[in-house]
Image (tube, rainbow, N blue to C red; front, side):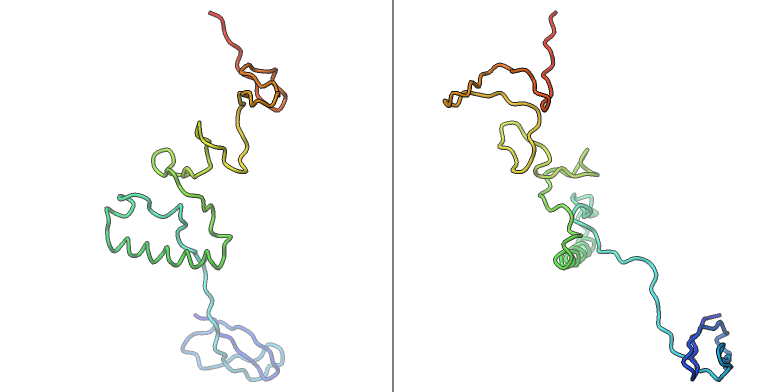
Length: 164
C-alpha cells in the first residue's frame, strides 16, 4: 500500500497509508475536517557518482577489453563527463601529476612524477632531499671535501665500515 499526502483546509498536511483503489480521504488529524489528496514529490535514494577518476580509468589494452570499440566509446563519454565535473569542482580532481608507471607493483598506486628522486637528476622543486650529500669544492673556501663529517642529528649516519 502506498503512502499518500493529504491536505486539510486548516493548512495541515499529513501522510496516510491507504490502498490504491480507495477513494475515501481520511479526516484531518487536527480538526477532523475534509481533506484532499496532494500530488507527492519523489525522492531518490543512493549516492551520485562522479565517474571514474584518471587513476581508475583503464590504462592497458587488456583494460579496454582488447580494444572493444563500444567499451572505449563508453569510457570516452565517461571521461568527458568527469572532466566537466572536475572543471566545476576542482576538489574531486585528485593528483594531477603525470603517471610514469601503472603496471606491476604500481597497479594499485601508480608511480607519479616527483614520487622518487632518480640519481643524477636535479631535485624536484619543493621536495625534501633524502640521505646525505658529498660536498665538492666550489672555490668558495667552504672546506667541502670528499670525506664525511660527523653526522648531525638531522641526518642519518653512514654505516660503519666493517673489517674482515
